[in-house]
Image (cartoon, rainbow, N blue to C red; front, side, top):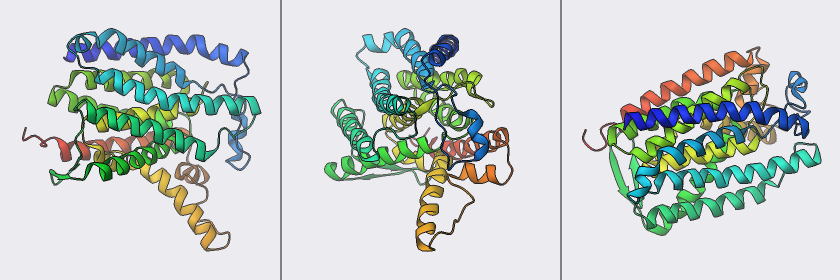
Length: 330
């Protein structure tokens, strides 16, 4: 099993890097550049025109890794690696369409927020129902730390989980605002799922998690500060879908609460900023939201933000591991 995970890692990394060498010049020729928000940090304006939609690179790497290494599980009828990839891919497709609209309009406005949420809900509900139909998911909530599983009525479970997925994916997307940040924060998350796959002998899930980890590392070759390419909504929504898919495939979605601490902090900072602004008639709780921009305003470099936020994510991955490792009495 370890060999298969290593094989998936190497293929995903190699294909992602190779795809980057081809895709970045192509995106430049197509003038698929990022438009920078004028109400964001002024020093980000120098990034105007940096190629976007770079998430296609690690999507290609992950697809290649699964195609090569998931053949044996497929022969035995285990389609879980394909199901996880397709779920993430559909969310990536929503992001790709959003990116295309932005590039065409040469601005920051893609499809409307409501349109995006409705599309995400359709994909999420379909995914949850399919997992349930194929026996990968039960209408029970595993509670980390206390090692308790609470049964729920199926309709309530599926409605709650569909909105939980959409909320989680959009929190993950918000984290993509500084060079390399979303990739860095997600590396420990993918690492936890690899460890869980090895512990509980879940080869297809381990293949997907290993390919995700390697794809993000390959992408960082081009996206680490100063970034030569941005992942765009294509990449950030794919990552959101991938993380949620893994949590659900392991039948422990609530692990995303401690595991996704950084994602949640990013989303909450946005919510707090808006609520405080409205309640106080124009005052700001943070210097700028999401919170990574607040730290930029405090003088942190993008590399420091990347390092600190990734370290925090790694710490919460360790905490989450301690909360789940004895789930089956191992």
